[in-house]
Image (cartoon, rainbow, N blue to C red; front, side, top):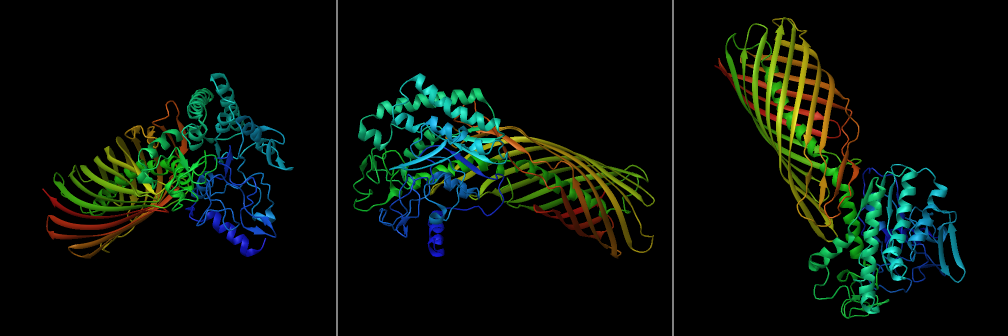
Length: 640
């Protein structure tokens, strides 16, 4: 293949597909199914040629346009599995393509789906010797071992996708309860074999209503195929529930019903009976306006390309649907991190007060109070199983301390923090209001000092708005929930500087423990995209080493700074348990946020005495590694 044609092939296949440019939690996408997932096993004789030979594979959707004709100028557009792979930064190349790599530019891949496969053939493509068979007719045939024959122990980080059953309905293999149970059993046996080989995450598609298609309308079998589709779906759901394991069951039937109920929002013509006509006219009636050969051919205005296969617009909606489920934990698992950020901002404001007071406590038996306003920004960098996000917040803290004797000072502080997080490609919005209470004790004796605190908090997640694309449309799912936190913090330091120098230089060690609990919740409604989430618990155990410095610039003014490095001992990735509201009895776990194993803390501030018992202070704090938190504080302190 010439370099220019190889480049053209790659460009056409990937045109318009949003590709991930960041790390993903999945190492590979492995697919088993029928024509709905086939990414090009059969040769497309209408694709661009090289030496008289086709260079593209047949995919069961419309061509890329603008002509949409098999005149050797256009390839078929990408199907949903290819689009999903692009979103995940992976590939979905056909496993057993008839065309060799010298023509397509692509090696054999991990998509074992083949157009025309029944459920028994899908099972063979997973488990059987020579089980992947692509027969193009006329003696053109290629076989390959079923996936598990060559890969008996699978990569646990691979993502698996299984669909099937449509051809069992179309070929009248499934006609009653018994035959539906047998077809479903083939798919479930394939899922079980993958689980036994070590697969951790398997997506299983339901079967859309095969009767509600242009082929169902044109053939007169609409009622029979709809009934058979329903029977197979029921059996598939029951058998998967009995099997168990980490299986994600989709609800395409519900999703497509919702799209049909709001056609214009997704770009489809609402004046067209979308389940009666198609684009290509293959096994169906072509729409006279938008169909091939119509007045203004445009597959994006129609749901079906042919009698049973969707257009590229529906292919994108399908890929976005699956991606919205896989990506939900990457955002929702940031809710505990928002609470940690609120706690950190509250604690750091207290530490700034304590450091500015070092060696200058109020007199024994007196109170010192403060009021402080704070602002913060937290940035989450896109990484494996973490959505990119930007959180901004405002807070207010009120507190007072009482000097018990020469060595001890005790106090209380109240904090209110508000945060707004935008995360993900569609800028989902998550709001948190944190109500915090801290009790603290401080000790100083000669050069030795110690600070300790205990904090409690109530978390009010009042507006959780997960947003995502569905084709050209955008959908949001809303919810709210609550949570709690508590934390212990301590520092022990030693002042190295001599009296009279104006300096205080104190190395210190620190220990922190925090526990954040976010209650499980359900997004409102029963749409095909609405999810429910289990409880989340985020523990943090940290040890640190740092240095504090204070310098008296003038009798009424001092500056202070600190730098520290903390080691996080609770740095394992966290899995989030979730499920679709519309799929009863199905719960699964997906990877969420992984805390950094270490982080750097830094701060700088200034304190100025406005009067003998009144001080104004300002400070800036930084915390983080790849994820960063910035904070500023302005406080007023007075003695009573």
